[in-house]
Image (cartoon, rainbow, N blue to C red; front, side, top):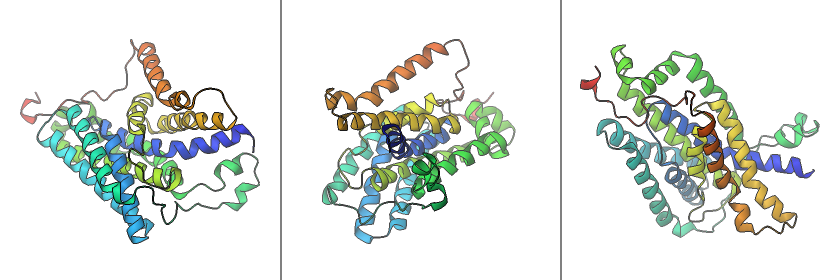
Length: 309
């Protein structure tokens, strides 16, 4: 395979965790709740997967445990921001600090230990004979296919169903949604919890398909990149797909350049995806400064029913 094909394969591998985390963030913020806890949730999903998989040898049990733990943390975030009306930014930052610290503590006993296996791959023999396409999609793992299917499902859900209409209504004008009989608190609890579970699954994917062992700080800021990608994708699942793979390619580019003997110091190569994230957000902010941003209008604002009018 040539350099471009290898880079595309690496982009899909590195971009899948970003895609899952971005989709989770979109669900959170479409409901009007800021999610800045993605880094901590990804770390908790990753360490839970490693612990359960190493101890039990069951991949399914490990994935279910990761989803359950991060969904529980999502419920905590929901309780703080929806019921107690706490500051959403502070609650998300607290979730990141809590997840980072707890995952480091829990992961001490398994640090560096190899997992019993990796995410199984779906072998599509009939696709392998197709040039380039066969290399890219012939042996993707199940979590990658799940993420691709999820993009389509969430896009249809948000834009073509009554559930999606209710979600967008709650994110844009919870008072109006409440008047129309939509249960605002239930919608926010549901989507924040589901979004947190997806972000936790992103952490699980990192240790199963991208870096098959636990190390403290495994995500290396990818949770924050996912927060930026939610804005970059303008809260749209289809755009999130291309954005995640684009930044996955940037993440892999530095390593590929090192293999080619690049004279650029590796520390600078590792900075590429983070620097590009900042530059892209600056560019989008400038280009769209006089246009509707697409941001859910109630994002970050607690809903107090007594003040709906």
